[in-house]
Image (cartoon, rainbow, N blue to C red; front, side):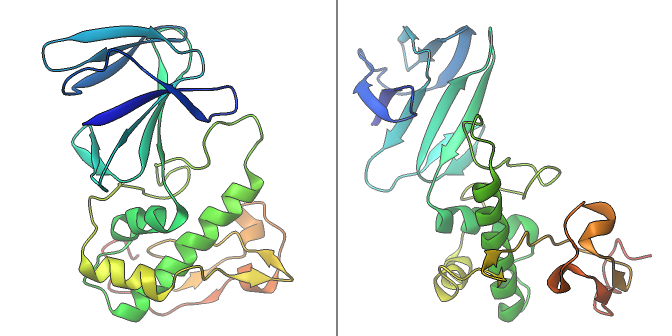
Length: 219
């Protein structure tokens, strides 16, 4: 069974929502600050101006739109009939959720390890730079941040890679790098100052590649 709690203004879980639906099926925003929580055979509507958080015990996964997630799921009101859905997890679970979405898990182990370090570094950089008014750290979309797909791609090999690289990030001049990456560069990368507006520093200066010729996107 799951536990549903109200969030306070600081985003901390507080009192439990009662009565609790028997088997949670759906959460929807009805109007600003109100949620309809539907279970198996019953439903409740609650006023939660700061949102609600759903958790399960025993390390079980929570499914949202058929995608499994670790940690907790938060539903945050975002205007009438709208809400943001946020998965709150520790950074290592987040890295595991991105790894298989950004690189095939059949790739060489060292490639996966390097990818895990880049994912973790980028995530930490974004956490540091996050606007104070935003109620979440990263987007799940690769168009805005990284391709986060919860526990969809987790397997024993992915978990081993995360453990092997746990806590490792890229640092330059005692600062976390914005560790941008992509699948295909066309034989050469350009400096991050060209298209991304980042200061030109040696790790982001660009250079010859020669490794992506087999990519289907290569041209």
